[in-house]
Image (cartoon, rainbow, N blue to C red; front, side):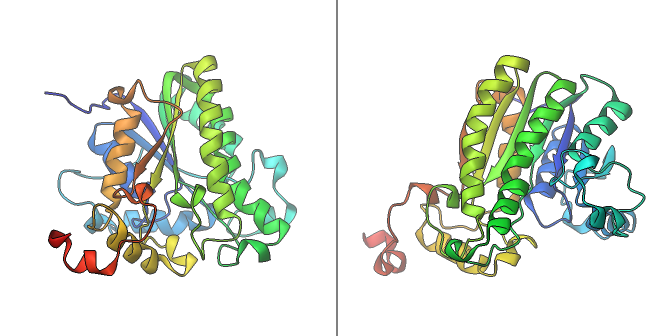
Length: 304
C-alpha cells in the first residue's frame, strides 16, 4: 500500500486566520498525514484565532479522522516586513501589534530556530495574499496599491524561501497558492492581484532552481479554483466566479478546500520528491478551457 506519511516532519503553514480558507484545510491535511504543524497568522487576527481555538469554536470544522487539531506554535507574522527594522512607526504603535515581539519574516525564522532548533523544519506552505485595491480595475489601481499587492502576495514568498531555507532540513519542500488570474483575464480581480499571482508563479520556477541547488529544497505552487473563504469574499464577486467554474469546467462539482489541501500534502511528501518548479492545477480542469460552454450543452450534456 502506498502511504502518504509525514510522521516526524515539522510543517509551517503561513496565513491561517480562520477555518474558512485553504490554509486551515492544508494544516488539517498535514496533521492528518502525521506532521507536527506550526501556523502563522496576521497580527491583528491573532487574538481572535487563539480565542476561537481555546473556546472550541472551530471544532465543528474539523470533520472525522483528524482527532484534536493542536498546533505546535501559533506565531504572529506580517508578511509585508522582512525584518522589524522595516516596520513603520505607526504600525509599531498600533495596539494590535504591541507586545508581539518580532512579527517579521526574519523574526519568524528566529522563533522557529529558537523553539525547534536547526534542520527541524521540513515543510513550508505560503497561504498569503492581499491586495488593498483588489476591487479596482488594474487601470485604476494606484502605484502604492499595486506594489502592496505584489509585496504581500508574491515577494513575501521569496522572502520566506530566503529566510527559512537555511534553517530547514536538506530536501525540504515549499508550496505556495496561486489562481488562474496569473495567466487569464478574470474581470473584477483587480488591484494588481493578477500581476502578483503571475509574479508568484514565475518566482516559483526560479526559486526551485536556486533553492534546489543550494539546499536540495523543492518549490511548487498550486493554482486553486475559487473558494468562498472570508478573504475571497473581499473581492465581491466570489460566488459569480464559483458559479462560472461550475458551468464551464470539465468537472462541474464545487471545489472543496480539502481537495487543494490533500494535493499540498502530497507535494510536500516523499511521494512528490520528483516534482519541483511546477504549477499544479486543482481547479476542476477550468484552466484547460478556452471558451464558455454553450448553455445547451449544460442543459443536455448527454445529447452532445
